[in-house]
Image 1 (tube, rainbow over the protein chains, first blue to last red):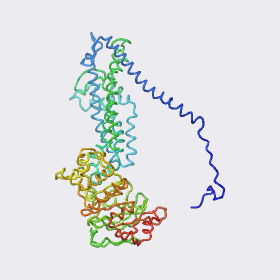
Image 2 (cartoon, rainbow over the protein chains, first blue to last red):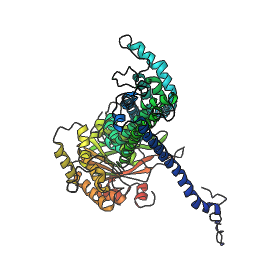
Image 3 (spheres, one colour):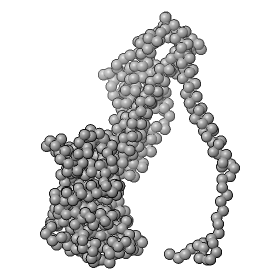
Length: 322
Length: 281
């Protein structure tokens, strides 16, 4: 290698001292100004959450006072009909509707999502994975209202064409909502699970192959167990997304609060009820109007609990192979 | 195709010594060349690893020691872009080729890795795992105890069999990985720098263990530590970087393969001499 011309030739003089300007005033100020600034930003999100919970709680209490019912009647009531005389505010039909949609869409999304995650992380060649993963994530970018009218204009007509006249399919039905919500949350499961499975150290895979394991054994008996808690957390996040889903469910499953086992009939979820009341004619301050806060509070409690549980599971996962 | 009965004829310009007299060859490579994509990692390596001996692979970084080791159990198949030419034999059977099932091969040619990599499972299940997937029908408890004893780990973990393998110290984890390998009853154990992540005391224990295991197993160890090669091995292969070719990349070649005491006292190849005396590498 030839010496570059920049290199100082060896000379009796000491090399020139480099100059150090030190930090500017602005740079020093960063140390004092930035922390409070970002603390305020963090505070805003916390305060927002606190504010929402506070308002929800306040209005929920007001609802119970105005409607003149107790907590037990609300949580245990099997009839929801604000227009009846006397009005009935049982939340069970809404819980049932929400449960049906969450359960049904999970039946679709969890297996498909997990299997595609395993395929992407263990089986797919690198090139295919580079195409497939973003494509799958594209599903998550489709507005939920689009899923809603897909259910109405595509899924339900197909269900009718296949099942009728043997089995009657209502125009608004839980099954088509389950199908579209299931498809909608597949990327949550597949993408998060794939991240978790890919993060399982290569050394563990090599160890298993070195013992004479097949690809399937490596995937199912080393990689999946090592990433299991992360996979479970992705399940819970997907389910809580299904619980909170509004527009697609409102369009597909309708607004009929009833406890029915037949998935081809209409149900109403908590979210759909909230929308329905808000666009309805209930006077502000009336029991019917206030009931949406109580339902919202219940919904908040459910999704919060699920997020906390998935957070605990994820934390457990992080400690597993470190 | 029978490989082990025939004399090894090296087309390699550098001399590769025949295996030690009286020992038959278990693993044989003949004129082996390996590429990762367009980069050649090994060129024309011919070597015959003798049975029930410890063979050390030494040489400077990037000379293809690990690549050679991982050819013997087809571990390189997992690396995208891997390609090889030449012949590889294990106990007279071919190692490479579409007709060979790498899964069966890997059970018979076990491997211990550079970084201890126990499964995130209990000590017991770490050892039992390989036996289970390979359909072991005997007494698993007995197998686990025997393997852990064989790996000189039983006394330290017999009360912790239900604790995670990751709770053990680094040296214990590496012996757990050795026990796990022993549990599937391989014939050969390939060790890829098994002590590079361990402290000197743990290293000494693993080295003692290798000495014990040699009666039943053939061991091939890659090491950066020439003192270790000298301490533990019967035969030593010294790999070197070849002269630069057109694209400037230098593949690894086998410079010399001799009994360890010969290689370290009277090396025949000037490059080996330069390496073991610390002038290159």
